[in-house]
Length: 256
Ligand SMILES: Nc1ncnc2c1ncn2[C@@H]1O[C@H](COP(=O)(O)OP(=O)(O)OP(=O)(O)O)[C@@H](O)[C@H]1O
Ligand SMILES: [Mg+2]
Image (cartoon, rainbow, N blue to C red; front, top):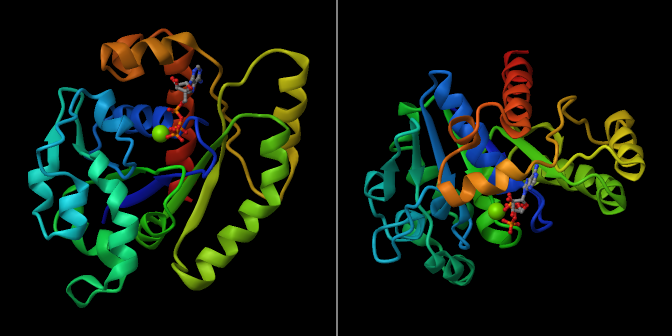
C-alpha cells in the first residue's frame, strides 16, 4: 500500500513546493518508488522539473475528464514520477461546484483517478495549492498524512489553534484516517526573533512539529533555476542536510 502525504498550508509562499519537491526526491534517492502529484494550478512543482506543457494532459484532465493518469505522469532522471499540473486546474473549483462527475461525489474524484496507479508507488506526495476549497477537499479525502510547512513568525503561532481545529473538523467530516505528520519549520534563521518563534512552535502541544527544521538556504532557490532537487543540485548544502533530516524523521514517524 502506498503512503500518501499532502504538503499543505493555505498560507502562500511558506515552503510547500520546496518541501514537496525535495522530500520526494530524497525518498526516491533512498530507493522508494515516489509519485509527486502537483495539485496546484500555479504548477510550480511541474515547472520545477521543467515539465510544464499546457496542451499535454494534466491533473485537470485526469480528475475531471477521465484521462488515464499515466498520460499526465512524467518520469524524471531523479527517480521521481511527476503527475503534472496546468493552469487549467483553476477551473476545477467551478466545475466541482457545478456537478457530480460520473456519479462520484465531488471530493472523491482525486481518490478515484489515482487509485488506478497509486499501488505502484511506496509514497505519493501531493503539493497543495494555497487556496481552492474543493480541490483541497479532494486531497484531504485522499491523503493519509499532512505535513504543514511554516515560517517561524507571529502568523504561524497565531494560526496553530485554527489549524488544529480545522484538522479535527476534516477528520470528522472528510477523512477519519487523516493524520498530522507534523508542522515543519522552514526558513529557520539564527537571529533572536526567529529563535523565539522556532522554540515556541516546537514546544507547544496544540499542533506537533518535526524536531528537524529547514534553514534558510540560498541553494534551495538556486536549485529551482537548475531544475534539480537539492540532493542532486548541491549535496553539501544546508538545504540538502536539513531535508535529509526531515526524511529521516518522517520515516521514523510513519513506522510508529
Ligand atoms: N528554506 C528555504 N530557504 C530559502 N528559500 C526558501 C526556503 N524554502 C522556500 N524558499 C523560497 O521561498 C519561496 C516560496 O517557497 P515555495 O514556493 O516552496 O512556497 P509555497 O508554499 O509552495 O508557495 P505557494 O503557496 O505559492 O505554492 C520560493 O522562492 C522558495 O525558493
Ligand atoms: Mg507551492
